[in-house]
Image (cartoon, rainbow, N blue to C red; front, side):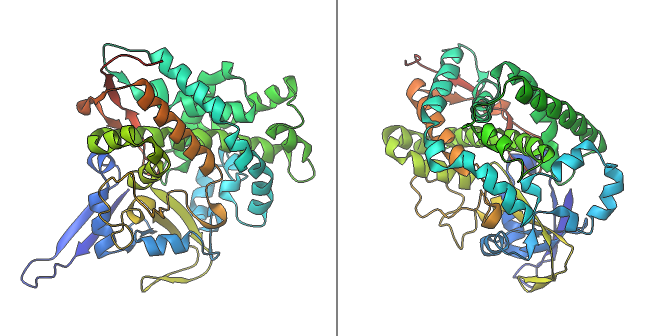
Length: 417
């Protein structure tokens, strides 16, 4: 996805400039914020050559996230009619169209109310011991290697998968397969995905659906468990809706947390003064996680279909348009955040928009926050010195989800029990 914009400098004797932003450029993936700042400053409501609207100012993003004149059901985007035959009524599309993530009220309201039972403050808080035990087990397994290792594959990926599997009541013996299905499904939330990736994702949906159905039949869940309660709600939700949204919870429930852990640790290692501050002031962990969510969050884009003509920044966006709220750009808007490009783990207030807003505010936000707080706390406890192998840092080839493929680190010092 490539977008261009024209910049007219304030000095009249300087020539007009053209800025081209290529979202697939590895340099942009490594650090998108300077170019997003240019977009926010010079064309904050930008129409791309593909017909998408990019919204980059905090005020606009925050308002549109809550505006009922926009919604998550992308079937109301005029471009969807062009894509639908290309998708060929795939199992993938049938599944995604039943995700609460993809629906607007009242269908969204009905499903979200049922699944919200898994993320009440009481249930999330009760996960503390489990998350701590999983983190300590993974850290013990890593031990004190003498060579650099990939933090992502050794810790940031398995921790959230195990936590969400536990929450959903899925056996950990299928961890590798569950992770493989999830990796194949992730491109679905990207603005542009190739036909091959969508076909692979459709196959993964079929296989994962069969696995969930067989697992639930073979191991009936406890009546008071999340899945037990959901299975009892047969009058409010179909079996297809249940399976589709369990897939959504599994994928969304660990992908963004994995990115948060990787992006967060990388940010701290690149700003060692903030890492040392957190070591010496562990009471700042909650505000530190909020700042890591703002500074380099796990997702860049929040898509919305426009239901009726709206005006944003003096421009009219017609009904049927697709609006992409650029969360990372909004989170570094200098009109809201002082010194926005600086990492400040004590930043208050911190009204970031990383989890979206309105009726589609991220359902799993409390769990993601808790996982990050516990995980980073245990990492700092177990690893007295952490060194970054900067040359080996590798970002994933995604536009929306912002996360690392490789984060090589080296532990210096003894492992602390």
